[in-house]
Length: 523
Image 1: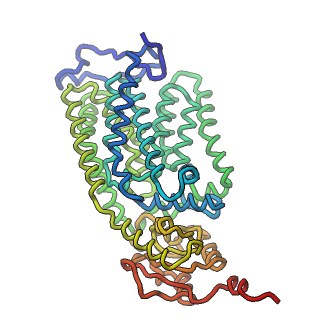
Image 2: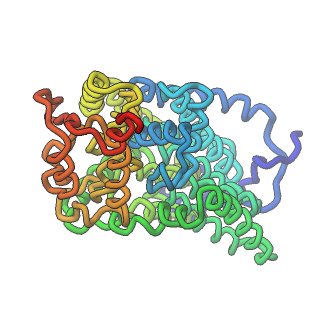
Protein backbone atom coordinates (compact mmCIF):
# COMPACT_ATOMS: atom_id res chain seq x y z
CA UNK A 1 0.00 0.00 0.00
CA UNK A 2 1.33 3.50 -0.84
CA UNK A 3 1.40 6.22 1.72
CA UNK A 4 -0.91 9.21 1.60
CA UNK A 5 0.42 12.19 -0.31
CA UNK A 6 -0.73 15.48 -1.79
CA UNK A 7 -2.04 13.77 -4.89
CA UNK A 8 -3.66 10.80 -3.17
CA UNK A 9 -6.95 9.78 -4.66
CA UNK A 10 -10.16 10.15 -2.74
CA UNK A 11 -12.59 7.27 -2.82
CA UNK A 12 -15.48 7.64 -5.19
CA UNK A 13 -18.73 6.42 -3.68
CA UNK A 14 -21.40 5.61 -6.23
CA UNK A 15 -24.76 3.99 -6.10
CA UNK A 16 -25.63 1.57 -8.86
CA UNK A 17 -27.17 4.44 -10.82
CA UNK A 18 -23.90 6.41 -10.56
CA UNK A 19 -21.87 3.93 -12.54
CA UNK A 20 -20.83 4.46 -16.13
CA UNK A 21 -24.19 3.38 -17.44
CA UNK A 22 -26.52 4.32 -20.28
CA UNK A 23 -27.48 7.94 -20.48
CA UNK A 24 -30.96 7.54 -18.94
CA UNK A 25 -29.39 6.58 -15.58
CA UNK A 26 -27.16 9.64 -15.49
CA UNK A 27 -30.08 11.80 -14.41
CA UNK A 28 -29.50 10.85 -10.75
CA UNK A 29 -25.70 11.06 -10.96
CA UNK A 30 -23.46 13.41 -9.13
CA UNK A 31 -19.75 13.94 -9.60
CA UNK A 32 -18.27 13.39 -6.13
CA UNK A 33 -16.79 16.34 -4.28
CA UNK A 34 -13.21 16.14 -3.05
CA UNK A 35 -12.75 15.07 0.53
CA UNK A 36 -10.60 16.90 3.01
CA UNK A 37 -8.65 13.86 4.21
CA UNK A 38 -6.31 11.92 1.91
CA UNK A 39 -6.43 8.17 1.51
CA UNK A 40 -3.75 5.74 0.36
CA UNK A 41 -2.78 6.02 -3.27
CA UNK A 42 -3.42 3.37 -5.88
CA UNK A 43 0.16 2.64 -6.78
CA UNK A 44 3.45 4.47 -7.07
CA UNK A 45 3.69 4.08 -10.84
CA UNK A 46 0.96 6.58 -11.71
CA UNK A 47 3.19 9.62 -12.22
CA UNK A 48 6.13 7.68 -13.64
CA UNK A 49 3.83 6.54 -16.43
CA UNK A 50 1.87 9.77 -16.89
CA UNK A 51 4.67 12.36 -16.79
CA UNK A 52 6.62 11.06 -19.82
CA UNK A 53 3.43 10.83 -21.83
CA UNK A 54 2.43 14.39 -20.95
CA UNK A 55 5.96 15.65 -21.64
CA UNK A 56 5.95 14.06 -25.10
CA UNK A 57 2.52 15.54 -25.83
CA UNK A 58 3.64 18.99 -24.63
CA UNK A 59 6.63 18.93 -26.98
CA UNK A 60 4.50 17.68 -29.88
CA UNK A 61 1.81 20.32 -29.48
CA UNK A 62 4.37 23.13 -29.33
CA UNK A 63 6.61 22.06 -32.20
CA UNK A 64 5.32 24.92 -34.40
CA UNK A 65 6.58 27.44 -31.84
CA UNK A 66 10.17 26.71 -32.93
CA UNK A 67 9.43 27.40 -36.60
CA UNK A 68 9.73 31.21 -36.55
CA UNK A 69 12.10 33.56 -34.69
CA UNK A 70 9.04 35.50 -33.52
CA UNK A 71 5.32 34.81 -33.47
CA UNK A 72 3.74 38.13 -32.49
CA UNK A 73 4.58 41.71 -31.40
CA UNK A 74 4.34 40.75 -27.72
CA UNK A 75 7.40 38.54 -28.10
CA UNK A 76 9.17 41.34 -29.94
CA UNK A 77 8.25 43.83 -27.24
CA UNK A 78 9.54 41.56 -24.49
CA UNK A 79 12.77 40.90 -26.38
CA UNK A 80 13.47 44.61 -26.84
CA UNK A 81 12.58 45.30 -23.20
CA UNK A 82 15.02 42.60 -22.08
CA UNK A 83 17.82 44.23 -24.08
CA UNK A 84 16.98 47.62 -22.62
CA UNK A 85 17.03 46.21 -19.09
CA UNK A 86 20.34 44.48 -19.74
CA UNK A 87 21.76 47.81 -20.95
CA UNK A 88 20.91 49.48 -17.64
CA UNK A 89 17.28 50.46 -18.20
CA UNK A 90 14.81 50.69 -15.33
CA UNK A 91 11.43 49.00 -15.59
CA UNK A 92 8.50 51.46 -15.60
CA UNK A 93 10.98 54.33 -16.01
CA UNK A 94 13.19 54.07 -19.08
CA UNK A 95 11.59 50.73 -20.03
CA UNK A 96 7.81 50.84 -20.07
CA UNK A 97 4.80 48.67 -20.84
CA UNK A 98 1.32 48.12 -19.43
CA UNK A 99 2.23 44.64 -18.19
CA UNK A 100 3.51 43.41 -14.79
CA UNK A 101 7.24 42.79 -14.33
CA UNK A 102 7.63 39.01 -14.09
CA UNK A 103 7.91 38.14 -17.78
CA UNK A 104 10.25 41.02 -18.74
CA UNK A 105 12.53 39.83 -15.94
CA UNK A 106 12.31 36.24 -17.21
CA UNK A 107 13.29 37.36 -20.71
CA UNK A 108 16.15 39.41 -19.29
CA UNK A 109 17.41 36.42 -17.29
CA UNK A 110 17.17 34.09 -20.30
CA UNK A 111 19.08 36.57 -22.46
CA UNK A 112 21.76 36.92 -19.79
CA UNK A 113 22.32 33.15 -19.72
CA UNK A 114 21.75 32.13 -23.35
CA UNK A 115 22.32 35.31 -25.33
CA UNK A 116 19.84 37.77 -26.79
CA UNK A 117 19.70 36.73 -30.43
CA UNK A 118 17.22 33.85 -30.12
CA UNK A 119 13.98 33.15 -28.30
CA UNK A 120 14.65 29.41 -28.38
CA UNK A 121 15.25 29.15 -24.60
CA UNK A 122 12.00 31.03 -23.96
CA UNK A 123 10.15 28.65 -26.25
CA UNK A 124 11.54 25.71 -24.26
CA UNK A 125 10.40 27.45 -21.08
CA UNK A 126 6.93 27.83 -22.62
CA UNK A 127 6.82 24.08 -23.26
CA UNK A 128 7.69 23.60 -19.60
CA UNK A 129 4.96 26.04 -18.53
CA UNK A 130 2.30 24.17 -20.49
CA UNK A 131 3.56 20.83 -19.18
CA UNK A 132 3.44 22.12 -15.61
CA UNK A 133 -0.10 23.40 -16.17
CA UNK A 134 -1.15 19.97 -17.45
CA UNK A 135 0.47 18.21 -14.48
CA UNK A 136 -1.22 20.51 -11.98
CA UNK A 137 -4.59 19.95 -13.65
CA UNK A 138 -3.99 16.19 -13.63
CA UNK A 139 -3.14 16.33 -9.94
CA UNK A 140 -6.27 18.35 -9.14
CA UNK A 141 -8.59 16.13 -11.21
CA UNK A 142 -7.04 12.94 -9.79
CA UNK A 143 -7.61 14.10 -6.22
CA UNK A 144 -11.22 14.89 -6.94
CA UNK A 145 -12.35 12.20 -9.36
CA UNK A 146 -9.74 9.47 -9.60
CA UNK A 147 -6.79 8.30 -11.68
CA UNK A 148 -8.52 8.33 -15.03
CA UNK A 149 -9.79 11.88 -14.52
CA UNK A 150 -6.21 12.99 -13.86
CA UNK A 151 -4.95 11.48 -17.08
CA UNK A 152 -7.85 12.96 -19.04
CA UNK A 153 -7.38 16.47 -17.62
CA UNK A 154 -3.65 16.53 -18.36
CA UNK A 155 -4.04 15.29 -21.93
CA UNK A 156 -7.03 17.48 -22.74
CA UNK A 157 -5.26 20.64 -21.63
CA UNK A 158 -2.31 20.05 -23.93
CA UNK A 159 -4.59 19.20 -26.85
CA UNK A 160 -6.88 22.19 -26.41
CA UNK A 161 -4.25 24.79 -25.44
CA UNK A 162 -3.15 25.16 -29.08
CA UNK A 163 -6.69 25.68 -30.33
CA UNK A 164 -6.46 29.28 -31.51
CA UNK A 165 -4.50 31.23 -34.08
CA UNK A 166 -0.90 29.92 -33.76
CA UNK A 167 0.43 33.44 -33.18
CA UNK A 168 -1.65 33.44 -29.97
CA UNK A 169 -0.89 29.93 -28.72
CA UNK A 170 2.65 29.20 -29.89
CA UNK A 171 4.27 32.43 -28.70
CA UNK A 172 6.17 32.55 -25.40
CA UNK A 173 4.08 35.32 -23.94
CA UNK A 174 2.07 36.31 -20.91
CA UNK A 175 -0.87 33.89 -20.79
CA UNK A 176 1.28 30.79 -21.35
CA UNK A 177 3.40 31.61 -18.29
CA UNK A 178 0.39 32.78 -16.28
CA UNK A 179 -1.55 29.50 -16.54
CA UNK A 180 0.60 27.39 -14.18
CA UNK A 181 0.11 29.99 -11.45
CA UNK A 182 -3.67 30.10 -11.87
CA UNK A 183 -3.98 26.30 -11.73
CA UNK A 184 -1.59 26.13 -8.77
CA UNK A 185 -3.74 28.66 -6.89
CA UNK A 186 -6.87 26.51 -7.24
CA UNK A 187 -4.95 23.31 -6.48
CA UNK A 188 -3.45 24.74 -3.30
CA UNK A 189 -6.77 26.15 -2.13
CA UNK A 190 -8.35 22.75 -2.74
CA UNK A 191 -5.78 21.36 -0.29
CA UNK A 192 -6.23 24.24 2.19
CA UNK A 193 -2.68 25.42 1.57
CA UNK A 194 -3.72 29.04 1.86
CA UNK A 195 -0.35 30.78 1.91
CA UNK A 196 0.71 28.87 -1.19
CA UNK A 197 -2.59 29.71 -2.87
CA UNK A 198 -1.96 33.40 -2.20
CA UNK A 199 1.57 33.12 -3.59
CA UNK A 200 0.24 31.46 -6.74
CA UNK A 201 -2.35 34.20 -7.28
CA UNK A 202 0.41 36.77 -6.83
CA UNK A 203 2.53 34.96 -9.43
CA UNK A 204 -0.38 34.98 -11.86
CA UNK A 205 -1.03 38.69 -11.30
CA UNK A 206 2.65 39.58 -11.65
CA UNK A 207 2.70 37.76 -14.98
CA UNK A 208 -0.47 39.41 -16.27
CA UNK A 209 -3.07 41.41 -14.37
CA UNK A 210 -5.98 39.20 -15.40
CA UNK A 211 -4.31 36.28 -13.62
CA UNK A 212 -5.78 37.76 -10.46
CA UNK A 213 -9.10 36.20 -11.51
CA UNK A 214 -7.87 32.99 -9.87
CA UNK A 215 -8.54 34.65 -6.51
CA UNK A 216 -12.29 34.13 -7.00
CA UNK A 217 -12.28 30.30 -6.77
CA UNK A 218 -9.66 30.50 -4.02
CA UNK A 219 -11.96 32.67 -1.89
CA UNK A 220 -14.91 30.38 -2.65
CA UNK A 221 -12.98 27.33 -1.48
CA UNK A 222 -11.93 29.24 1.61
CA UNK A 223 -15.54 30.13 2.42
CA UNK A 224 -16.57 26.50 1.92
CA UNK A 225 -13.77 25.15 4.11
CA UNK A 226 -14.00 24.37 7.78
CA UNK A 227 -12.97 27.08 10.31
CA UNK A 228 -10.76 28.88 11.15
CA UNK A 229 -11.49 31.00 8.09
CA UNK A 230 -9.89 34.15 9.49
CA UNK A 231 -6.52 32.43 9.69
CA UNK A 232 -6.96 31.15 6.14
CA UNK A 233 -7.78 34.66 4.93
CA UNK A 234 -4.73 36.12 6.65
CA UNK A 235 -2.42 33.50 5.21
CA UNK A 236 -3.85 33.92 1.72
CA UNK A 237 -3.58 37.69 1.98
CA UNK A 238 0.02 37.49 3.16
CA UNK A 239 0.93 35.13 0.33
CA UNK A 240 -0.75 37.40 -2.22
CA UNK A 241 0.36 40.81 -0.98
CA UNK A 242 3.98 39.97 -0.19
CA UNK A 243 5.23 39.34 -3.76
CA UNK A 244 3.10 42.14 -5.21
CA UNK A 245 4.47 44.66 -2.72
CA UNK A 246 7.99 43.43 -3.39
CA UNK A 247 7.48 43.93 -7.12
CA UNK A 248 6.19 47.43 -6.45
CA UNK A 249 9.18 48.28 -4.25
CA UNK A 250 11.65 46.98 -6.82
CA UNK A 251 10.15 49.07 -9.62
CA UNK A 252 8.85 52.08 -7.69
CA UNK A 253 5.37 51.94 -6.09
CA UNK A 254 3.91 54.92 -7.99
CA UNK A 255 5.28 53.78 -11.35
CA UNK A 256 4.22 50.17 -10.70
CA UNK A 257 0.67 51.26 -9.88
CA UNK A 258 0.46 53.54 -12.93
CA UNK A 259 1.78 51.09 -15.51
CA UNK A 260 -0.03 48.00 -14.23
CA UNK A 261 -3.35 49.46 -13.06
CA UNK A 262 -4.26 53.12 -13.35
CA UNK A 263 -2.56 54.13 -16.61
CA UNK A 264 -4.65 51.98 -18.94
CA UNK A 265 -8.02 53.74 -18.87
CA UNK A 266 -8.11 54.63 -22.55
CA UNK A 267 -6.77 51.21 -23.51
CA UNK A 268 -9.58 49.47 -21.64
CA UNK A 269 -12.31 51.08 -23.72
CA UNK A 270 -13.50 50.11 -27.18
CA UNK A 271 -15.40 53.31 -27.91
CA UNK A 272 -15.38 53.91 -31.63
CA UNK A 273 -14.11 50.41 -32.46
CA UNK A 274 -17.08 48.33 -31.39
CA UNK A 275 -17.65 46.36 -34.58
CA UNK A 276 -13.93 45.82 -35.08
CA UNK A 277 -13.27 44.28 -31.69
CA UNK A 278 -16.57 42.39 -31.55
CA UNK A 279 -15.77 40.71 -34.86
CA UNK A 280 -12.41 39.66 -33.44
CA UNK A 281 -14.11 38.36 -30.31
CA UNK A 282 -16.59 36.28 -32.27
CA UNK A 283 -13.83 34.85 -34.46
CA UNK A 284 -11.67 33.81 -31.52
CA UNK A 285 -14.67 32.42 -29.65
CA UNK A 286 -15.49 30.28 -32.68
CA UNK A 287 -11.89 29.04 -32.91
CA UNK A 288 -11.80 28.01 -29.24
CA UNK A 289 -15.23 26.39 -29.52
CA UNK A 290 -13.94 24.32 -32.43
CA UNK A 291 -10.88 23.30 -30.41
CA UNK A 292 -13.18 22.34 -27.53
CA UNK A 293 -15.54 20.31 -29.72
CA UNK A 294 -14.72 17.24 -27.67
CA UNK A 295 -15.13 19.00 -24.31
CA UNK A 296 -18.24 21.12 -24.59
CA UNK A 297 -20.84 18.38 -25.33
CA UNK A 298 -20.03 16.35 -22.17
CA UNK A 299 -20.01 19.51 -20.03
CA UNK A 300 -23.34 20.71 -21.46
CA UNK A 301 -24.89 17.25 -21.12
CA UNK A 302 -23.90 16.83 -17.50
CA UNK A 303 -24.90 20.40 -16.69
CA UNK A 304 -28.36 19.56 -18.06
CA UNK A 305 -28.93 16.20 -16.40
CA UNK A 306 -26.70 16.04 -13.32
CA UNK A 307 -25.18 18.06 -10.50
CA UNK A 308 -21.44 18.40 -10.95
CA UNK A 309 -20.39 19.30 -7.41
CA UNK A 310 -17.73 21.61 -8.87
CA UNK A 311 -19.00 25.08 -7.99
CA UNK A 312 -15.48 26.42 -7.55
CA UNK A 313 -14.54 25.35 -11.09
CA UNK A 314 -17.63 27.07 -12.49
CA UNK A 315 -16.68 30.21 -10.58
CA UNK A 316 -13.17 29.89 -11.94
CA UNK A 317 -14.54 29.67 -15.47
CA UNK A 318 -16.81 32.68 -14.88
CA UNK A 319 -14.01 34.82 -13.44
CA UNK A 320 -11.74 33.80 -16.31
CA UNK A 321 -14.44 34.81 -18.79
CA UNK A 322 -14.60 38.18 -17.04
CA UNK A 323 -10.83 38.47 -17.47
CA UNK A 324 -11.20 37.78 -21.20
CA UNK A 325 -13.79 40.55 -21.43
CA UNK A 326 -11.67 43.04 -19.46
CA UNK A 327 -10.34 45.74 -21.75
CA UNK A 328 -12.70 44.81 -24.62
CA UNK A 329 -9.98 43.67 -27.00
CA UNK A 330 -10.69 39.92 -27.34
CA UNK A 331 -7.25 38.92 -28.59
CA UNK A 332 -6.91 35.18 -29.07
CA UNK A 333 -4.29 34.70 -26.38
CA UNK A 334 -6.73 36.13 -23.82
CA UNK A 335 -8.88 33.02 -24.33
CA UNK A 336 -6.15 30.68 -23.07
CA UNK A 337 -7.25 31.55 -19.54
CA UNK A 338 -10.51 29.67 -20.16
CA UNK A 339 -8.84 26.37 -20.98
CA UNK A 340 -7.92 25.02 -17.49
CA UNK A 341 -11.40 25.36 -15.92
CA UNK A 342 -13.02 23.99 -19.08
CA UNK A 343 -10.69 21.00 -18.95
CA UNK A 344 -11.52 20.29 -15.30
CA UNK A 345 -15.25 20.52 -15.98
CA UNK A 346 -14.85 18.12 -18.90
CA UNK A 347 -12.84 15.70 -16.76
CA UNK A 348 -15.62 15.80 -14.16
CA UNK A 349 -18.39 15.29 -16.70
CA UNK A 350 -16.68 12.39 -18.45
CA UNK A 351 -16.53 10.42 -15.20
CA UNK A 352 -20.27 9.87 -15.13
CA UNK A 353 -20.87 9.41 -18.84
CA UNK A 354 -20.53 6.11 -20.75
CA UNK A 355 -16.97 5.15 -21.78
CA UNK A 356 -17.58 5.85 -25.46
CA UNK A 357 -18.11 9.53 -24.54
CA UNK A 358 -14.56 9.70 -23.21
CA UNK A 359 -13.18 8.07 -26.35
CA UNK A 360 -15.11 10.48 -28.51
CA UNK A 361 -13.98 13.52 -26.52
CA UNK A 362 -10.31 12.56 -26.76
CA UNK A 363 -10.56 11.74 -30.45
CA UNK A 364 -12.32 15.00 -31.32
CA UNK A 365 -9.78 17.00 -29.30
CA UNK A 366 -6.87 15.20 -30.95
CA UNK A 367 -8.26 15.82 -34.45
CA UNK A 368 -8.83 19.52 -33.75
CA UNK A 369 -5.34 19.76 -32.27
CA UNK A 370 -3.85 18.19 -35.40
CA UNK A 371 -5.53 20.81 -37.60
CA UNK A 372 -4.20 23.67 -35.48
CA UNK A 373 -0.71 22.15 -35.56
CA UNK A 374 -0.83 21.93 -39.35
CA UNK A 375 -1.91 25.57 -39.40
CA UNK A 376 1.03 26.51 -37.22
CA UNK A 377 3.54 24.54 -39.28
CA UNK A 378 2.40 25.61 -42.74
CA UNK A 379 0.76 29.03 -42.56
CA UNK A 380 2.91 31.98 -43.74
CA UNK A 381 3.66 34.90 -41.42
CA UNK A 382 3.54 37.96 -43.70
CA UNK A 383 3.99 40.50 -40.91
CA UNK A 384 7.13 38.72 -39.71
CA UNK A 385 8.50 38.72 -43.24
CA UNK A 386 7.79 42.45 -43.45
CA UNK A 387 9.55 43.08 -40.12
CA UNK A 388 12.58 41.11 -41.32
CA UNK A 389 12.81 43.12 -44.54
CA UNK A 390 12.42 46.33 -42.58
CA UNK A 391 15.14 45.26 -40.14
CA UNK A 392 17.51 44.60 -43.03
CA UNK A 393 16.88 48.12 -44.35
CA UNK A 394 17.51 49.60 -40.90
CA UNK A 395 20.81 47.74 -40.58
CA UNK A 396 21.90 49.00 -44.00
CA UNK A 397 21.16 52.64 -43.10
CA UNK A 398 22.51 52.80 -39.54
CA UNK A 399 25.49 51.78 -37.43
CA UNK A 400 25.18 49.28 -34.54
CA UNK A 401 25.16 51.96 -31.84
CA UNK A 402 22.89 54.42 -33.64
CA UNK A 403 19.48 55.07 -32.07
CA UNK A 404 16.55 54.63 -34.44
CA UNK A 405 12.80 55.20 -34.23
CA UNK A 406 10.39 52.69 -35.73
CA UNK A 407 7.00 54.40 -35.85
CA UNK A 408 4.63 51.44 -35.92
CA UNK A 409 3.25 48.59 -33.88
CA UNK A 410 5.98 46.05 -34.58
CA UNK A 411 8.71 46.51 -31.95
CA UNK A 412 10.39 43.32 -33.17
CA UNK A 413 12.07 45.44 -35.86
CA UNK A 414 14.40 46.81 -33.17
CA UNK A 415 15.32 43.30 -32.03
CA UNK A 416 15.73 41.86 -35.51
CA UNK A 417 17.88 44.78 -36.65
CA UNK A 418 20.04 44.88 -33.53
CA UNK A 419 19.40 48.63 -33.10
CA UNK A 420 18.49 50.46 -29.92
CA UNK A 421 15.22 52.43 -29.81
CA UNK A 422 15.53 56.19 -29.48
CA UNK A 423 12.66 56.27 -26.96
CA UNK A 424 11.20 54.24 -24.15
CA UNK A 425 7.91 54.00 -26.10
CA UNK A 426 8.51 50.98 -28.32
CA UNK A 427 5.29 51.25 -30.33
CA UNK A 428 3.04 54.00 -31.56
CA UNK A 429 0.29 52.42 -29.49
CA UNK A 430 1.40 53.88 -26.17
CA UNK A 431 1.60 57.36 -27.73
CA UNK A 432 -1.65 57.26 -29.72
CA UNK A 433 -3.84 54.57 -28.10
CA UNK A 434 -3.79 52.53 -31.28
CA UNK A 435 -2.94 49.49 -29.12
CA UNK A 436 -5.50 46.79 -29.63
CA UNK A 437 -6.02 47.44 -33.31
CA UNK A 438 -8.37 50.37 -33.00
CA UNK A 439 -9.76 51.68 -36.24
CA UNK A 440 -9.44 55.44 -35.75
CA UNK A 441 -11.91 57.42 -33.60
CA UNK A 442 -9.94 57.14 -30.33
CA UNK A 443 -6.45 57.40 -31.87
CA UNK A 444 -4.22 60.48 -31.64
CA UNK A 445 -1.81 62.44 -29.47
CA UNK A 446 -4.45 63.36 -26.91
CA UNK A 447 -5.35 59.67 -26.41
CA UNK A 448 -1.82 58.49 -25.62
CA UNK A 449 -0.59 57.47 -22.18
CA UNK A 450 -0.76 60.43 -19.83
CA UNK A 451 2.41 62.52 -19.99
CA UNK A 452 3.96 60.45 -22.78
CA UNK A 453 4.35 63.10 -25.47
CA UNK A 454 6.46 65.58 -23.45
CA UNK A 455 8.77 62.70 -22.50
CA UNK A 456 8.85 61.50 -26.11
CA UNK A 457 9.80 64.94 -27.46
CA UNK A 458 12.48 65.34 -24.80
CA UNK A 459 14.02 61.96 -25.61
CA UNK A 460 14.16 62.67 -29.34
CA UNK A 461 15.74 66.07 -28.73
CA UNK A 462 18.38 64.67 -26.36
CA UNK A 463 19.25 61.64 -28.49
CA UNK A 464 17.93 62.17 -32.02
CA UNK A 465 17.47 59.02 -34.05
CA UNK A 466 19.66 58.80 -37.13
CA UNK A 467 16.81 57.02 -38.88
CA UNK A 468 13.05 57.20 -38.50
CA UNK A 469 10.96 54.46 -40.05
CA UNK A 470 7.34 55.36 -40.72
CA UNK A 471 5.72 51.92 -40.68
CA UNK A 472 2.17 53.24 -40.25
CA UNK A 473 1.22 52.33 -43.85
CA UNK A 474 -2.02 54.31 -43.80
CA UNK A 475 -3.04 53.42 -40.23
CA UNK A 476 -4.79 56.04 -38.05
CA UNK A 477 -1.53 56.86 -36.24
CA UNK A 478 0.25 58.02 -39.42
CA UNK A 479 2.64 61.00 -38.84
CA UNK A 480 0.52 63.39 -40.92
CA UNK A 481 -2.20 63.04 -38.27
CA UNK A 482 0.16 63.80 -35.37
CA UNK A 483 1.36 67.43 -35.19
CA UNK A 484 4.44 66.79 -33.04
CA UNK A 485 5.83 64.02 -35.22
CA UNK A 486 4.86 65.78 -38.44
CA UNK A 487 6.79 68.91 -37.41
CA UNK A 488 9.85 66.88 -36.41
CA UNK A 489 10.00 65.07 -39.74
CA UNK A 490 9.50 68.26 -41.72
CA UNK A 491 12.18 70.18 -39.84
CA UNK A 492 15.01 67.69 -39.50
CA UNK A 493 14.47 64.63 -41.70
CA UNK A 494 14.04 63.82 -45.35
CA UNK A 495 12.50 60.70 -46.86
CA UNK A 496 14.52 58.23 -48.86
CA UNK A 497 13.41 57.05 -52.24
CA UNK A 498 13.62 53.49 -50.93
CA UNK A 499 10.49 52.12 -49.26
CA UNK A 500 9.88 48.71 -47.71
CA UNK A 501 6.38 47.35 -48.38
CA UNK A 502 5.03 50.88 -48.03
CA UNK A 503 7.12 51.81 -44.98
CA UNK A 504 9.01 55.09 -45.50
CA UNK A 505 12.57 55.63 -44.19
CA UNK A 506 13.65 59.11 -43.10
CA UNK A 507 17.29 60.15 -42.55
CA UNK A 508 18.41 63.09 -40.45
CA UNK A 509 19.40 66.21 -42.35
CA UNK A 510 20.47 68.41 -39.43
CA UNK A 511 22.77 67.48 -36.56
CA UNK A 512 21.31 67.90 -33.13
CA UNK A 513 22.37 70.82 -30.94
CA UNK A 514 24.17 68.47 -28.55
CA UNK A 515 25.96 66.73 -31.45
CA UNK A 516 27.04 70.04 -32.99
CA UNK A 517 28.37 71.25 -29.64
CA UNK A 518 30.31 68.03 -29.16
CA UNK A 519 31.82 68.35 -32.64
CA UNK A 520 32.91 71.99 -32.17
CA UNK A 521 36.59 72.55 -31.18
CA UNK A 522 37.14 73.69 -27.61
CA UNK A 523 38.08 77.33 -26.97
